[in-house]
Length: 184
Image (cartoon, rainbow, N blue to C red; front, side, top):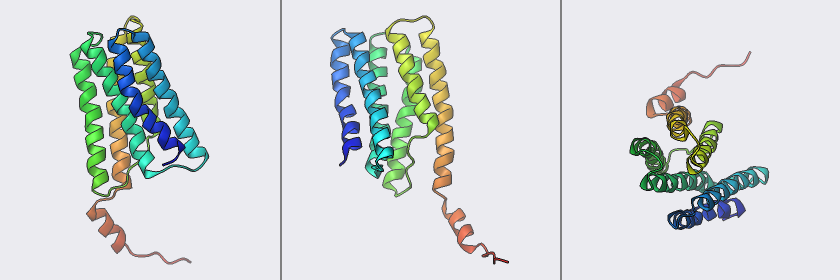
């Protein structure tokens, strides 16, 4: 357990804090909790890379903390009537699919991948969508839907990268039986 992982764990504890504050009617203060979670995400990633403290636990927990926070936010926005159910369903399909898929392959011993730049951009775009919705900015819902569609694209990119990092049995056999080239 290191500092970046502790910061990641703090994001898990911010989820019920966010929900309590949101449902007490302090939506703008609740948004600040989401921002605080985002700041800890940035800080833990920076420290992990800068001090060479990247761990398998962090690689797994970091995106899980992000996804669970966003799931809590989407549930709260949906239940308060701030977003349409169709947007929430699309969001849930993508994010729960990513969580279940990651856990499934992790427990099968597959290589997990840290969040890539597209995934991080998606998270930032979601935060912006929440800001627009909370502050009732025009076209906020349309923006959220565009971000959800973009998140499906980033998921496809992640799946392709995951497949490249985890060759199947046929690819492994092909690599092992390939002739070795001699140097000249």
